[in-house]
View (cartoon, rainbow over the protein chains, first blue to last red):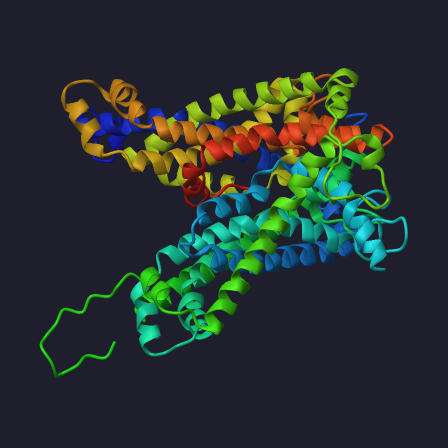
Amino acid sequence: MSVLRPTFLSRGSAGRHQRAGMAFAVPAALVFLVVLAYPVFESFRTSLYNIDLLTGEASFAGFGNYTDLLADSTLRQTVGNTALWTVGSLAGQLALGLAAALLIDSDWRGMRWIRQLLLIPYVVPVIATALIWQWMLDGQYGVLGHALQSAGAVPEGSTPLGLEGSSLWTVIVVNVWRGFPFAMLVYWARMQSIDREQYEAAQVDGAGAWREFRHITLPNLRSATIALLALRGIWTLMYFELVWLLSRGGPAGSSEVLSTYIYKLVMGEFRVGYAAAVATSAGLLLAAVGTIGWLTYRTSTRRRAHA
Amino acid sequence: MPSTLTGPPRVVTRPPAATATRSRRPSPARVASVAGRVVALALIVFFAVGPILWMAVSSIRPADELFQSDPSLVPSDVTGSWYREVFAGSEALRWFANSFVVAVASTVISLAVGTTAGYAVTRFTFPGRRVLLAGLSVAYIFPAILLLVPLYLALNSLGLVGGLAGIVVAHVTITLPLTTWLMKSFVEAVPRELEEAAWVDGLGYFRGFLMVTLPLLRTGLATTAMFSFILSWDEYLFASVIGQGDNVTAPVAMAGFVTSFDIRWGAIMALSTLVTVPVVALFFVLQRYYEKGLTAGSVKG
């Protein structure tokens, strides 16, 4: 028997074991190949063609779609919006999530119920979220729209979702509403595992609540923050549904983000090849951001392990 | 507490914090800080829950009260007319039935595939295991919008665009990474010795999995199924591109409802309430597992 023969082909129990493992994994591997790996490859291939969805005609364009990216001024505005959307959403979600986590981190009676209530925005279907906020912000009859008009924040009869100056910010606020419970839960879970003796020692030293927070709680939440930034960062960068359902990227592209732009290119303009080029570039950007995030996370945990 | 060198040696027992503060008269600073906490907590609960209550209230308000320029917070009258309008005047039942069928089908498929995969990567070493794990992580964070073009083209060439089956396939791309990830963590919690005993007893790998491991995964399977169901029930992007005509899911139909009618907010809020209720009900049934699943597996969205 050849030495080079892989274990999973051997007759012994080790070979049987490996073959069993592969058999269990085969369905998932097939699905991953067919609906994920192949589409990613196909997406890149598509980006090299000009395709007309209506006629089904395709002509090879080389990297023409990619050079078009550079000249696309709408895309430039969209990238700027996407950056603001991501940074604004993350900052809001993490700040509010942290505040909420600090507030629910007590043993008051009924706190368990309050925690459940605070999680609900994260559970509500996104379509309902969008419709609720559209209704509340409605320019004619919306309870918030009316309040904003009375306060003089928006002109009479208009909704902040319909104004170029405020549409993106409004969508960000709704995204903070929807996403802060997740940050709260992650922070709160991390707080449960902070060694209570650190706080007791601080109390002996006469440290106030602020110094306890600053010198014990916050440093312990470091890894949770990095994990949240990486995960939520990637999801938020390419999150489609909420922006689309709230504002359709409008008015006049003022709340257009990369995901809604890709959607419009495909479904509205049928420019499939160009959409694939935008998607592929966005995917590469994400991979870069993800790698940087992962490396930061790894070095920061390493450094702490050595300290 | 400073230790004393004088006096008899004693065991320092700290009274529970709660009784300690109760027995002492609370200082004004402490009262103020507790009051501040209560106010902040009330504000944040109001921010979180207010919009949902407003949705429910709006769905049962009579039209004349709904369309006031200065709406009152508490409805003076209650009506079921918006719900009647939704069911009589639209295909709402069909949309919800479609959503239910799609969510159940994609959950069953991804649970079957995801559980065996989760089992394979935790219990076995085999060539390609690391690749599968890496692919799993990438798939897990892979944004759906980047799959839009190729998935649409693939489903189109298979003739699956326009039908519920196409939506199911698309939803499996979203639910499968989640179910595999969650089931992996649930399999890890099952003691390995039980299966190894079954293997030694001559049950074989597959019967060992079916008869020993699977029954122990009941809670995990239920939890994962709920998450998968919610994910599919909630999904809009793929469903909007693939579903056509009668074959649309509730979120897609609802999005169309807003633009096609003169905007009937009462009916829209009734629909929103209907689409929210099953998900929130599942959440309260599952709350114990929900937090664990969220933090362990981390759900997209």
